[in-house]
Length: 162
Image (cartoon, rainbow, N blue to C red; front, top):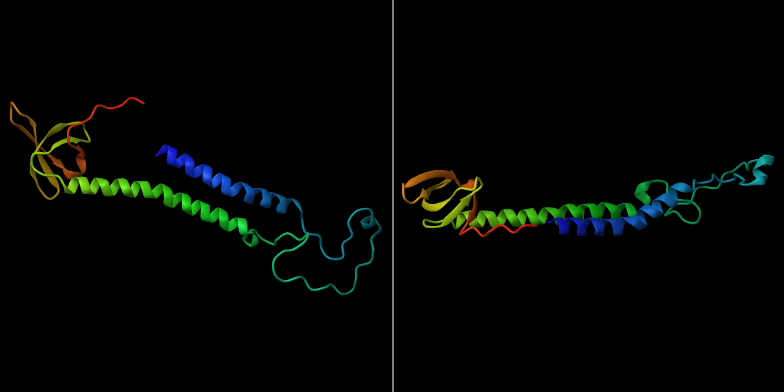
């Protein structure tokens, strides 16, 4: 699971790096109002024209950056990448939960089980939401467990050290 998480984060970083660069460059240059002189000529206070030309409609072009973040196509790429990341990470959890439900539905008399507490035994009776397990053969010890408390069905394999 950790490998999938880091792969997703790398994917998101690769998608958002160009967007972050474009956003930073767009924020660094402020729009200059029409009729304003830039540089040494600005110190001389040139008279302003009486009529301002209407602002251009449509997408931002030339030196004028977009008016807001929502005008940037990178914003939607970032949102799509975040939504994809949440979907990808939730998918593995849904698969694991479906496999667990299927395992508990197949539970039947005679199966060897291990509970979440580490108790091992053999199923004697399966009810709707509980299971009766024979824990000790010599003393005929039986225990009742809720179905959700069963971790594994079958003989337990030795744990691998990481």
